[in-house]
Length: 102
Image (tube, rainbow, N blue to C red):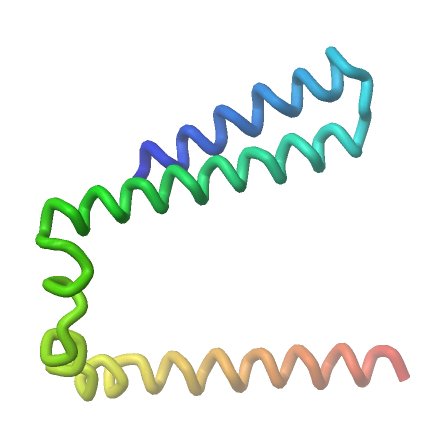
């Protein structure tokens, strides 16, 4: 998976240089290069995920309801505090932004 991220960064760098210096597109070239690199990264990640699933027996084997719901209670118990903290933090930032604009 790290290879997909590195490939995305390299594609982004090459396309940015090519669009800005080679084709003289400026900021639009950087935006286009970044968009293309992100699409390439998403496709590479999808291919990697499908490859791993194929090695493990496919979707049906990996996505059995029993396997997904076995530890769900423990997962939510572990992440409940983090969720509440993040929600309160986002609401606090929203309140400060609203107060700052008035």
